[in-house]
Image (cartoon, rainbow, N blue to C red):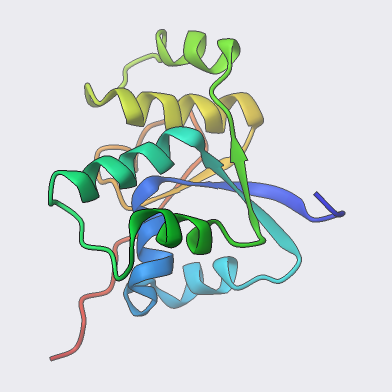
Length: 142
């Protein structure tokens, strides 16, 4: 990873908002995301989540899916594959607050890689079995 340290795992919404709606990111999180000497982890399941949400009409992208994904992965994103260890951890997360399999895999990825999860998911913000940094997207000024 070229000497850049990975400290954070972006959940799907944090990744999407950071690319598609950067003005919705609070200043303290913008500072983290704009750090030039940092790489960010992204679970492979997040790529699928964006594709699926776009496919079923729940997420509009400004370009064709493949082109959007290629640009969104950029140079500072390290896609972390689903591994046996991650899947096993996801199946046994203690006191998990929802039944979303993608969230389970994302949290397990953060746990296995010892990363802090950046998330907008209110159900995950107080999950004490992983390092989580929750942020609420900023509403656009009208």
